[in-house]
Image 1 (spheres, rainbow, N blue to C red):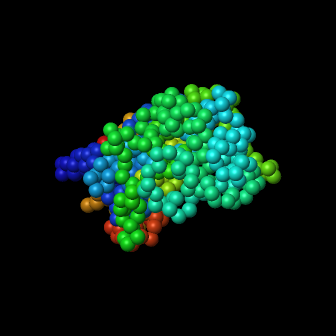
Image 2: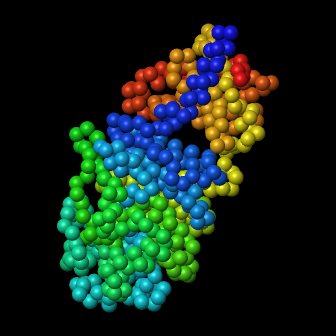
Image 3: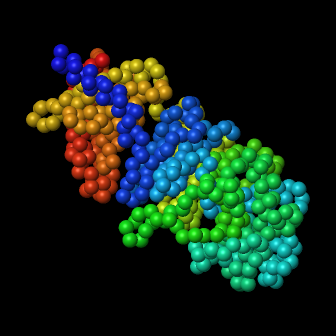
Length: 516
């Protein structure tokens, strides 16, 4: 009777565990920052496995450095299938990032400027091969050899930021022409068209041309012709007073102890067109969808904007009209842009052939995230869409494993310690946990599921252990066969987990029986 009572109590512990586990929620404050997720805005039942894996990529990749605040969103076939907020827009107040939080998007701003230009090109009001002095005659004489094509593919020879341009601007610029005076008198770095060298000031001049040709202020033209048609409600140059409360705080690392501190004030009005706009991942995905579905201009114009631009020496630039053209080993077409400044890192990638848009925004540059990460996440969703995902969360397979199991783990000298496995379903997904006597349950990530076998990862913060089990005649057996410290820092600091990890080092597992 006492034994049955113990099993009953153990089952209650496991049933409660999924709802309250600190590992599942992953909302811890770490020495080097915040690494947490605050819940899902948009969740598609079709992509449960992909969402879970993508979430882990974001949280796990930033566990060491921390992640103050971020947002990720992905759309497939025009529908947002996952959008999630991570961390905090204000760490000191504990204010979480939400669906309307506004981030700086840095150089992703260039795609909005390029799209506004594309609209004017389609209307015949601007021509790529016209010189920029045709539209802006007050520019210095040495700019007369530069065409709009040179600007949008970074072949102009105009310098990029340096010094105060990049990190110390606090002055507000009401007129684009005044901002152009920051660099207009500087000599060109090379003759226009000779080579490709990145400069955000190229797009400041493009924004001045848009303003001149359209007869509207640059931000007004963006609002009327790009943001409203694309359905964007959280994208701005100058944030309206009514929306200031939605703007995230921005963070940099302290040089003394690597903690997060508020970034110094910056005014980005000196280059809205090149790096000064604000938005979030949700709006960026809507913008990408508008481009892929020709809401902003025709398919032919979009094709023109994505055409590779070449130097006068016929060398590739890696750019279209504003778009970065990503090269992949399997000839996959990816277009988009990234943004980087001390207070922001952002990306938007479009997969035209797969009809996928994915975007990321964060409130610091010190985040372990790159365009390759977005490509990896997009591929996870595409594999699940094609039903090629190696996670097999079917109802039939789940039923083979759900319940409480007692197993024996070898501890040396042919002796075995008891441990307990608990498998449970959440939204038709099989989840698992492992419990050793007098220890907190540890969640298990299921990486492979079959009718007669299962492979698991115990993602401890300091170690990762893999467990492989076989189900035969109603009993399970197997082994834990891999154990690796994630970082020296965690190995040193988390001695308790190091001890727990030793219990999962390569050992035989046998005599697993279902208790309920």
